Amino acid sequence: MRRLIDNKWYDTESARLVGANCNGSRGDDYFRESLFRKRGGAFFLERQIGETEDCFAHSDKLYPMSYDKAREWAETHLPPETFAVEFSGGGAAKKTLQVRITPRAKALALREAARRGVSLSQYVESLILADDGDDDPPASLDL
Image (cartoon, rainbow, N blue to C red; front, side, top):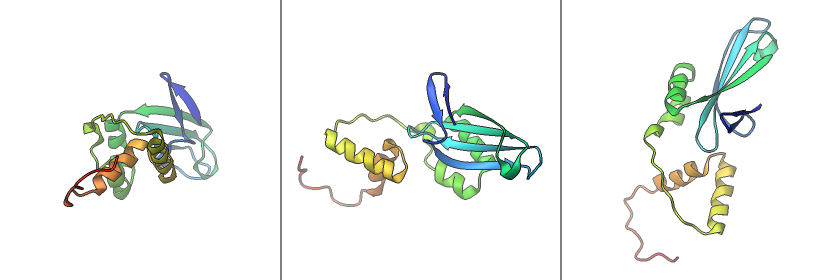
């Protein structure tokens, strides 16, 4: 499902599913909520409500969520392991960093981020955090 909300696109096909919570069973009134994260890091909730088989809904709505609201929802509705993986970084305290790189380096980074199913920011951060800082820095950089 794709919706334009406050001049921003929210798409369940291109966003990453963080987790879902379904209440009800076959033939019963039920609802299903699915938390998604866009490539840029924004969260939104898909709410499906209806009476049908296998917990698929008649009506769908999308709700943009702040990091704090998404974290609160996930803490209540998702397994602890899923919550820990998604929210262990304390995203509310993240800062912006602007860097200049060559077009080729950007293309390679974008391709690798897409292959891993993460945002460019998440990919770059994972590279930085993978270096524990214990190694001696190189004597020179070949740029």
